Length: 101
Image (tube, rainbow, N blue to C red; front, side, top):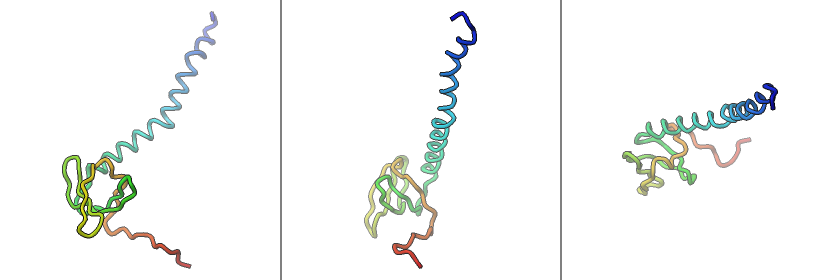
C-alpha cells in the first residue's frame, strides 16, 4: 500500500463511478422533475390534462395544491396537482381508434 498509484486507483475508481452515475441517471431525473414542476405550476383553466391514473380531463378550477378536473359532461373531480402527468395543448387532435389505410 506504499505505492501512490494504488491509493489513487482505490479512491479514484469509486469517485469516477459516482460521477458517471450522476451524469447518466441523477441529473436527467432532476431536470425532468423540474420541468414537471414548472408545467404543473403553469396549469390554467381550460387545459386538457392526463392524470396519473390515465384519466383524461379538462381543468375547470385551479387552486394552490388542487385542481378541479371535468372528466365528463357535468362531472368534476378534485385532484391534487402533483397527480397530473401530462398537459395537452388546447385543441390537440385525439388519435383515431381505427387505422386509416
